[in-house]
Amino acid sequence: MLSLSEKREILNSFKELREQEDKFGRFFYYYDKSPSRKKMAVK
Image (cartoon, rainbow, N blue to C red; front, side, top):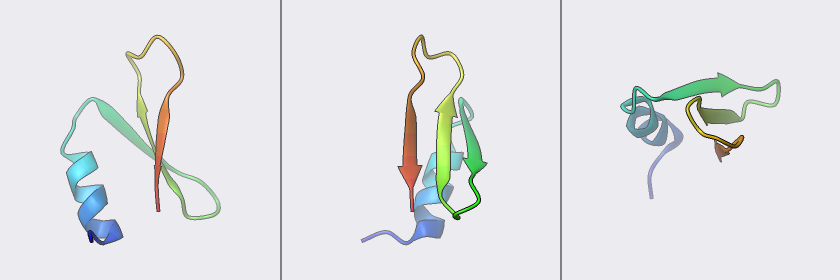
């Protein structure tokens, strides 16, 4: 099982993804070129 820091390291290796953290400590990754709003939460 991967830790949160390992997951974030993998996701941040994709330059196309933009990371954003909400007030609850959840991380969302956005792909700006997507035709629809898609996000993936990692916690």
